[in-house]
Image 1 (cartoon, rainbow, N blue to C red):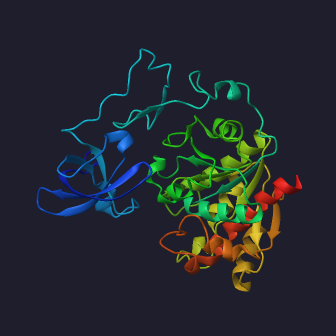
Image 2 (cartoon, rainbow, N blue to C red):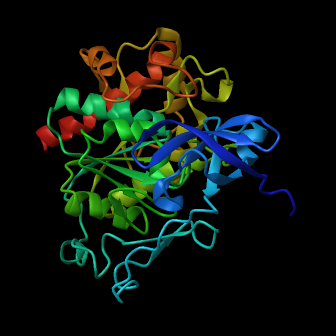
Image 3 (cartoon, helix red, strand yellow):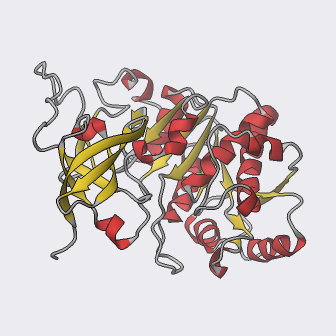
Length: 366
């Protein structure tokens, strides 16, 4: 299948900005054109002005959701050094993420023998009732965190990043902004770059609870969302799988519903069809589905109509929203979903914050 990767070669003209795990560059191509590129120094080394870079520009050229970036594949004239080899390379970690791609990364799993958490996780099998808040989009994360901390300051919150969107956790500027308020990030499946690496949802949840000592964990895909506009063709089906995993391990799943009055696509207005499918068909166990009080009557009617189609195993929870506006406006990371900020898609962020408030309340009520 030719043309799957669109390659370019260029020269770093300057460094624009950086955040944890990523650096944004201006790159000049051979024809004199300049474009924005993103490099992950943990993978390719630290780029500097004058370096030649190989780029993957496919998603950029096609206008797909990469934030407008070309992606640096390599600094071919200045490759990073190999990691130290003390003769125990395999024993130090052999979880392979982005497997069998040219940039596969070999990492230390939280529960591997060489991990400092091995003894803790070797027989870990229970979340002991930990609330697990599930969300369709990465953009819900800061609002959920804001709502949880408003309801219970100091709550130890972990983020479990699934592999439905971006694979490197470093792509997320949101996550970089939350580093001071989260106890850590666990990247699972093919996702990588978290504070801890795990093989799947189940081992990731156990790592969050027992290795990070989280009281509450938020599960959502990384930035980006793959969807074809059909009932089943979207990466957010993993929300239902997260509910199943949480219940299997003795956790308490809380659904952050995707509610919007601003999305221009009818299938996402009211209660998104993503939430209807994930909770209605994929989640085989029950969850607390949170609806914020005080929605606009027209929007509330749409939401209620969709909720009525969901199976009775779920419990719909109405959550008061007093104080959540202030919490959202003081969120520790900027709020944006599909290019819309807080006031442009208020119900979306309010619903996420309400889910965070409810998850924190479970810790107080037991």
